[in-house]
Image (cartoon, rainbow, N blue to C red; front, side, top):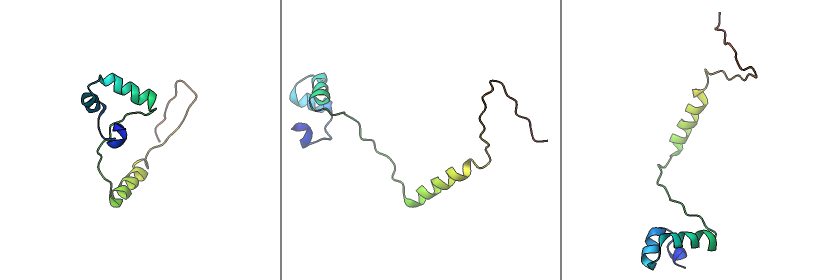
Length: 81
């Protein structure tokens, strides 16, 4: 119930409020509730303009590269002559 009341409460804080070991809370959440804990991370918001700019840079960034695959262990790349 306490986890559902405020899902943002850390397991460490919850253990301190209930006066039990942190490992007890973690075990209960993992085994009894079948949940996983994770940290919600703050990230930078991307605007539409920055998304488009990022996609354009990804598309044009690899324009001069040549990808090749070889089964040979040793191979030579001959320069353009």
